[in-house]
Amino acid sequence: MGGSRTDRAALGVRRRLQLACAFAAIAGLCGAAPSAPAAPSPVAMAAPATVPGTERFDLTGSNGQTYRISVGLPQGYERMADARFATVYVLDANGSFAMATELARILAAGGEIPPVVVVGIGYPVDFLSETVLQRLRDFTPTPDPVHERLVEALTGTGTPVVSGQAAAFRRFIADQLIPAVEARYRASPHQRLLAGHSLGALFGLAVLADQPDLFDAYVLSSPPVLWDREYVLRRMAQALYPKPRADCGPVRLFLAMGREETTLSKVIGLPPDLTPAERDFLKAVGDPSPVAQFDSLLGVLQRQPKADLTLRSEIFPGETHGSVEPRAWVEGLRWALGPGLEDRCAGKSGSGSHDAR
Image 1 (spheres, rainbow, N blue to C red):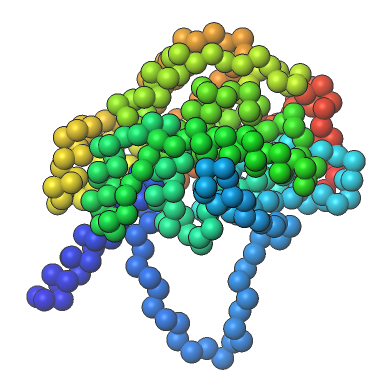
Image 2 (cartoon, rainbow, N blue to C red):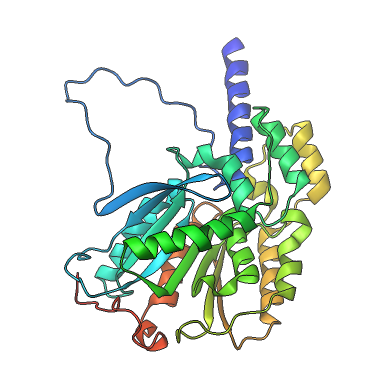
């Protein structure tokens, strides 16, 4: 009986750690217990696996924060010496960079998109689960005390939880990261795409509203519309979309959601035995349907003038908050960077050389 109670207690801890991370990352990726030491093996010590054709560097922003930047170059980059490439900036690089880089290469190899440079924006730690507080700080456009209190209670570290610093993070990307990337690599200034999931998608919408011409296209999945009493609905209703950039046509926005994201409790994995902090949180925000809130966001966007913004949206059947990201990534890149890109950008980039692999 004692062992059974211990197991149940451990399960409760893991569930709550997952909940804390769900607001700041992808539900289900956080809270795993540390692995037990490996048994002795006759195999020689293995070196860490890396993604071929990638490199990384750290860059400290004027906001005082240090970011780990990972760069994935397209296959054949050195051979295409005269080409400049569309550049895909990927948030949550600690969890998504390897996936994004290889999916982009697969799509390019099949001629579905041109070769691209993938730039992952992450933090100087190893795992996505270690970035909870950084993401809450950088990806959110406004403070949300209700979410802050919940994450503070569930993490139990005593570290202050700060949100609402997206403007400073955006300035780091605009003023420091993009110039560094375009100086160091053959990245086209005329074809930039931003990809983000969950809170990363909320950040992407904030960029679109506040500095819309920073990127030519956005691929965003599962934005948490409930943040700060549905702030994003109010902000997007007031947004003025940009004039087309660099002859590439209107800014393109791809928005996606998983059909299985039916309730907040389901998305973040709330257990049946709620803690006081969890009960207080649900009392404050209710248990809204993220899919219904996504539909509300689409309604706001569709009522805006469309001359300078092209919108496509998808709700993917069978996909959850965790599984929808790669699906959105593939479909969004096909749509934003697929056939016709060279015509839209008036030949500004050499990245359309599909025969250069």
